Length: 207
Image 1 (cartoon, rainbow, N blue to C red):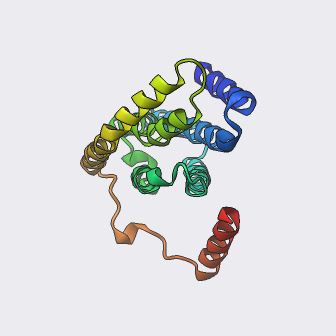
Image 2 (cartoon, rainbow, N blue to C red):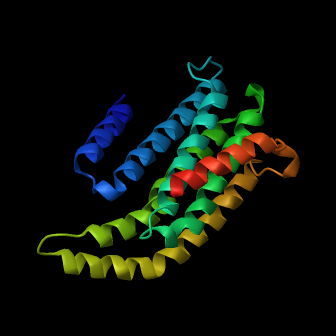
């Protein structure tokens, strides 16, 4: 409950105080973080032999939509486009792990998978999400310390891309150890009509 209230507070805070150009992006990030926490709760409940109140498949589908929203917002921002490729790699890893979790039968889920979902949340918040946030912080700095803050963020960004790559490599190894790296047989074949519709919607959104 404390976590859910914190996310609601952040959503309301961002709606009121986040820079207008990045408001949607900030709110979208809270949606993803909330659902990842819900996935942790569901997986933990299943491993404890109880019946969850939410569907894992529906949560994973929702996360896919959250990720798509984030991708569109970042790609459509000139200031954040430099972070797009690394952001996508990070969210792809998270989605791959979630795909494999949802493909497992309940009796195949183990306590170690709960730890992996916790690691997903940390990987997203401290690395994947932080990358565009550093750019945003640099671009929106105001007040008497603005120049110092911009300089600090520029210095931090000089090293952060390498840190993100290293952490993505580490997280990918963690997923592999947990048996949560898919191969081509784990993906559903694309529906050409759906793919074309999504591509058209994405193009319209960006334009």
